[in-house]
Length: 126
Image 1 (cartoon, one colour):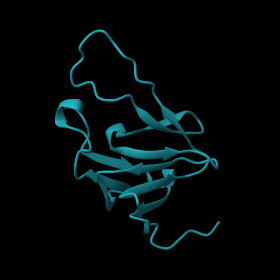
Image 2 (cartoon, helix red, strand yellow):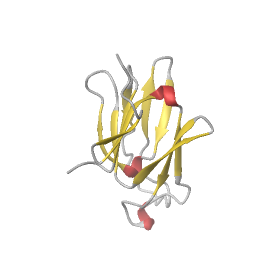
Image 3 (tube, one colour):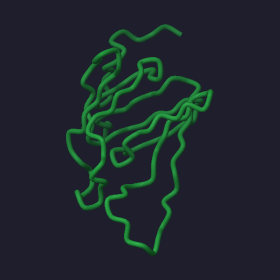
Image 4 (cartoon, one colour):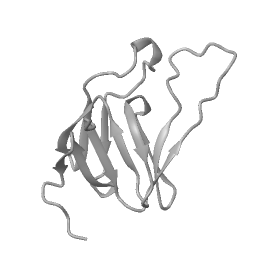
């Protein structure tokens, strides 16, 4: 089954996934642990963890699949994405969750929707 949105980040990059920290205290609306793409120079780009359906950083770059997001194109020099649907019940999600994601083009090598290349429109030469 093809992933609705797959982003291959620029190399070198890797994934950082925070571990879930169980607590005896009821913390409501906290959301899941964070997921980040890490670039050289300690740049950490936060991703909407509740939308991540696959994540891999073998091969020297991060590849992240999202289940309920859509690529909207370039806006004000950034790649834009919107949340089309939640993958979890509202009660399990942070009320402060983002409904948009914007990424700098230099952070991204390619974007696919259901296996079809969306960006860049013409594959870059190595």
